[in-house]
Image 1 (cartoon, rainbow, N blue to C red):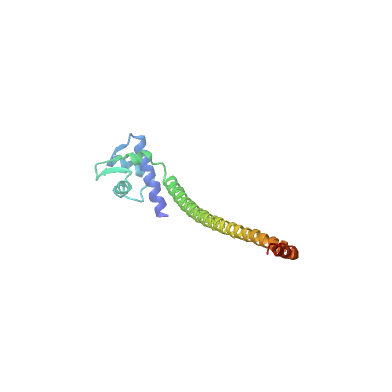
Image 2 (image 1 turned 45 degrees about the horizontal axis):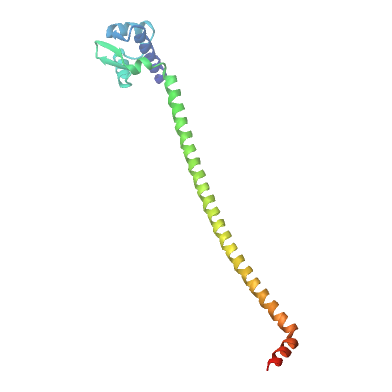
Length: 163
């Protein structure tokens, strides 16, 4: 609850400074805070806190002035929402990168498997070619042997005729 009260008071100061061209004397700040019911915190403490948040530059007990970050500031809720969105974007980017990494690993795995399939296909074709060559040679040998065996008596008679 006190953080919300503090943030409310800080937002009042920032918006008041924006309304007054970004600069205010310290005593005006104290009067303005008490008029708006923000007496829970000391004005000096709140001004220091704004300086820590880099929303304002504060010279103790003299004046306070908005920084560029202070001019861009809207509310703490918007700031937390933006930080939350940025965190969500970071988480989603991390998850996306992990998924892309897994996808690349899967693609590499598929490429390796495709390469292995290609190599096995080449080996299979070489073996088939070797088998076909053997089949042709065995077929020729069998044809010649069959021709010789079926005509052996004619061949022997032919050879006898020359001797």
